[in-house]
Length: 350
Ligand code: SAH
Image (cartoon, rainbow, N blue to C red; front, side, top):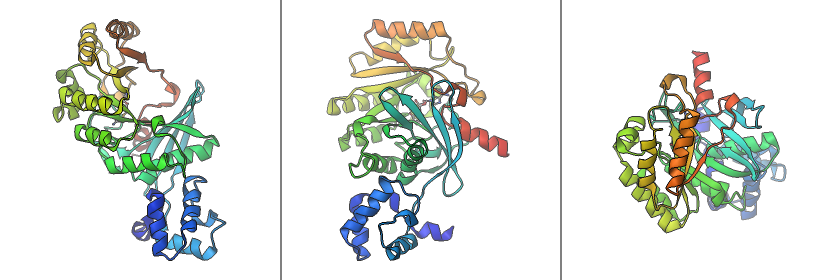
């Protein structure tokens, strides 16, 4: 174990960084390029597989570098819609969840960015138990690689909407986006990547500053600070006005539409008045609202809005010309909402 810690996490390195490291080892540039292809196109989990590299080089790499791949601990396939949910085991024995959704336009992978989460949202299963640690860029990448290898299909879209808060693990999240979109690797267009945040305002500005055309999703879940503060502790640090100012800055600078996630919770944020207030706040913004009937997590004591209340909420937003959709619930038979598998595993072990 000690040995592994001293090795460099090779999958997190960019091609440029890998070339520099190879130059330091006295290896030519084309060897770095070959290795990068093995790591990010073939998704090799061991240096021994890299058969077009000289054996001595493979041994040298094995001494200095580690490939932090992940293993399938559990795999569930929804019999309704083909959604696949993985529980992956990481090199240190921690677990993360990853979901693959099938759409007409291709396969979309929902990746986790942390083991657990510290944001403490009242409705969320990942919040129970807090954040154990950040994931490295390679551990986020490998969720995509392992799913692609297992399914034998090309992944075309990414949503950073699994366990954890990507903007708290900002550097690794950004490194992941650059690596997964690299034309020398998986080449998934940045425009096909969505990043969802509970609203870490300074990092939203920072992300906008990078100029990367990712689709930004904001977990809003409430029309005012009073309700949002009760559901999402992050709102006490940055209130809705500050959050919406950062979102406006993003839409103005990138010209891209932002998505607001709004989980409808019975008797908490699903009234007609709540819908009106939300519409007034979002009026004129380049945005889209995604309504999600809350997934029941037993511990939270919160339940999903009733169908007629979802319809009423949608109708109010439409009346105010706000783009709105009700999210299709995929994989409802396999506990596909974040954090539930990992949580259940911990419980069954204790
Ligand atoms: N931390 C990020 C990404 C992870 S959560 C964020 O907050 O956006 C991904 C999405 O699932 C968020 O919109 C989150 O609010 C939502 N979510 C979490 N628990 C849920 C539940 N029980 N039912 C419905 N949506 C939930």
